[in-house]
Structure formats: C-alpha cells, structure tokens
Image (cartoon, rainbow, N blue to C red; front, side, top):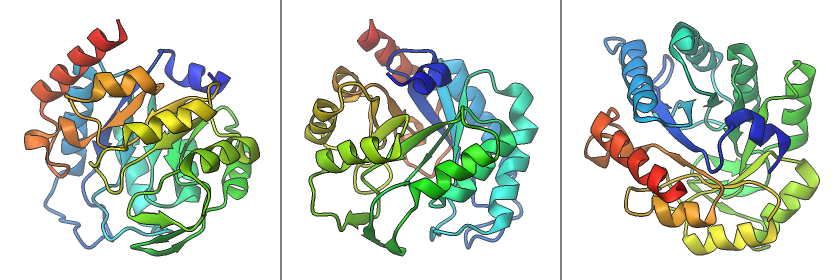
Length: 266
C-alpha cells in the first residue's frame, strides 16, 4: 500500500460512499428551488451513521459533463463542503467531473484527503476527445502546498473508449510507473455499472503493491467478491432509494451494505 493511501484512509480495504451533490448553478439541470445543502447533509449523515470509512463529494448531476468546468460549479461545491465541514467525521475526497485541475483546486480549498479523476490516457468519449494531463495536475497539487493529498487515478473512463491499444492491465501498470498515483480505480462503462471482476483481477495481478479499487457498480450482492480481489471500493448508486443513482441515499440500504462489508473484511 502507498503511504498516502494508508494515511488517507487508515483502514484495510476502505469503502468510500458517494455524496452526489445536486445539479449546480450553471448546469442545465440546476433547480434554484432545490436545497442543495440539505440534500448533501442528509446523504453525508446517512453514510457516516452506516459506518462508511470515507465519503466523496461529486457533481454527478451536472450533465452534460465538461472537461473544463465552470468556475461557479467548483465554487458552489466548495461552499457546500465548507458548510458541512464541522459535521464530517470521516476522511473525505472530492471529484469535479471531468476536470482534474478543478478537482485538485477543490480538494486544496476544502482540505480533502484525496481526489478522484481521470488523470491519464486518451479517450473517445460522449464529451469529445479526452486527453487529461497527469503531470500538470500533480504539479498543481504540489504547487498549492498539498503534496499529501492522495490522487486516485481512474484508468477506465466511463462514457468513453480508450484509444490506447494496450490492455487495461498494461495501461494501469504504465500509469503507476509514469504518474505515481496513490491508487488505481477500475470502472464500468457508465455510472452505476460494475467493472468486470476479471478486469479487477488483471489489474491487481500486475500491481500487487499498488492499491486497486472498484470504482463503479458495486452492489450488496457483489461487494464481498469485489473486496476479495480489490483493495477497497467506491459506491453510490447501490445505496440510493430503489438503487437509482439520482435518488437520495437510503439509510437502510447504506447500513445493510456496510454490514456485508464488515462480515467480508472479517
């Protein structure tokens, strides 16, 4: 395990619960009548009460997604997280879809323990050609005085197809060599869809010393199998009312999920 991964989570095989913030100002789905803070607060407390090891704030509702996010989105996320900061009792991370620089900026501004993004690779995607710059993002993090902030690299972008002809395992191994991530994340095709267990196995096999986490689609019925392979997971949709990504977190589903996790880790 990487030093920063251990420091960020302090738990073997951590499980991170998603706080999906509602559509932000400037995005097409924004509704000024919605109390974004109240919704985020309810989800945060449901996750913490269920015993999740960490939480992550993300702007999944800001569809269509952008590579260069409007400043107001990042600023609003910072304001919301700032308002909740005194209530956060577990390590937290951030992700501004799909903008590595904004994710880093938000993480620094809010004091996040980790950030998640697509930092490497070249993809054909629903949003156009996708070409992130890991070197630029990591240098930005260090320049802002947060070299301790862990960077979680998603190497199988959702809503996209890699233009790199190498296997997923080879791309993950190369990313670790060239870009020194603190963890590698493996995803399904879209939010809420599971990564294939065979993909997790292949990536973990070539990266025995690097944390490898399942990033999407982990469910109550599959989390034990996922944790038998991976070094942790990130979960959102499975915890929601009716398992719908766009609903609020169901406290009972969240509690049931972590009950399964605790049995699996034991």
